[in-house]
Amino acid sequence: MTELSRPSRLIGRQRFPRAGLRAFSIVELMVAVLIISMLFAASVPAYQRIQRKARAARVANDFRVFGAAFQAYAHEKGSWPAEAAPGVVPTGINQQELQAQSWTSTTPMGGKFDWENNQSHPGGTSPGGKWRAALAITGTSEAPLIIDADLMEDIDASLDDGNLDTGNFRRGFGDCPIFILEP
Image (cartoon, rainbow, N blue to C red; front, side, top):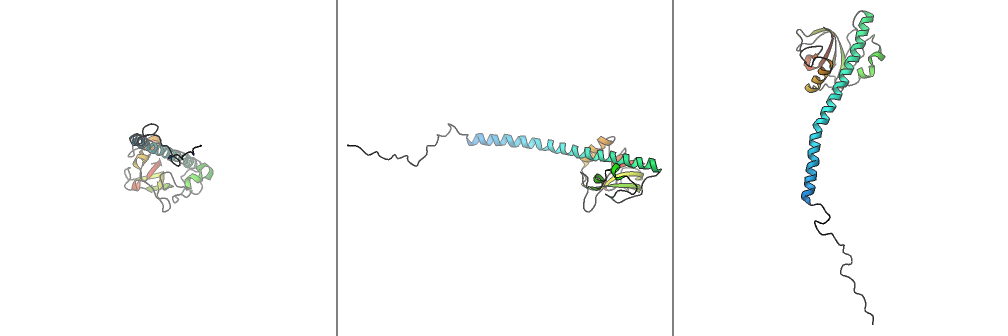
């Protein structure tokens, strides 16, 4: 007589490994997540600082390039160009030397570059607040200026003496950045 095999009680069931043999405990997972989040939290300020330094370097470089173009114009013509609106290339300035695309686009700190000819900046950091020739960044309706004191100090350290109250790079009217070419 042959005996029929009985179906196993385990058919349709899976064997799960016993707890603790090959799995992570919830405490171990929580510790790993905590360590990763702490590393992330520590890296965010460093990343923001690097971004601010990059924006400051770009603005400082633009001020240098634009200042050289305006000084070359004044040297050739014997006078500074006429006043122009923010983001508008002043008449007579060579658009290639000025890099017109950078002049007319929004700066990394918002606002647009503005040529200041015989303008005054009341409330700025210079006695009288009047300069013969200066480059400023001015907020416009389509490009509002974001005043960031740390960014302005980084720009000043790159361009000037590191003090926003003295030197060629200063705070102008409404704390807008201004780079003085001729006092």
